[in-house]
Length: 196
Image 1 (tube, rainbow, N blue to C red):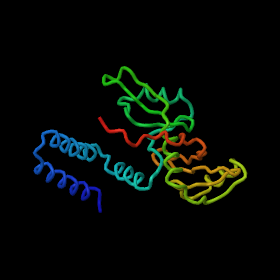
Image 2: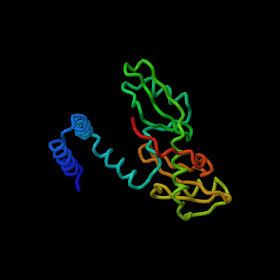
Image 3: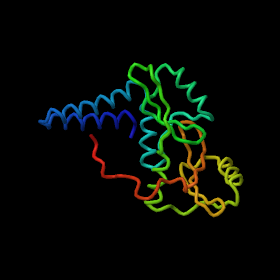
Image 4: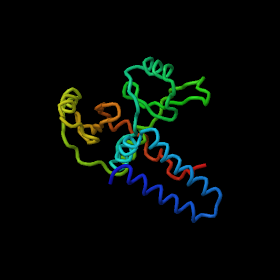
């Protein structure tokens, strides 16, 4: 199904639900969802949205919008960005960070987050797939990852007896290797938190 056709069907469904609901709060939420879809389309982000949905369906690592070698280069990018992507995640030297800006854009922050650690914990809790390859050293693994004509979205490999995740961050064209030992501690993910 083409992006525009899916978009149209979702808007129709939300419109029907909007007509059927009596709750003013639910109407406001449905209108916000419709506005979000129209915003995605109006700003030319339909393809990016579909790729994002695919990554969710593929259970890919958390999406990042940029990658930097150093914190200084990330801060320079943030300082010079005319409209910083507040709420997005970026990578700095392979570590996840959260981008946050005040509404007036006068205060801009880049804060480390444990998005990857929680993602890895969920992978472990759900049961790891069988490794696709085994290597003696990280250098051998890196050479294999870099030689793949199509980067694997996410596969498990073993390096020196330890499982690692190989992930492809498609938005930034980055092939990464993460040791699963970085996973958050068991029981550290609270699934029972209710949204405010």
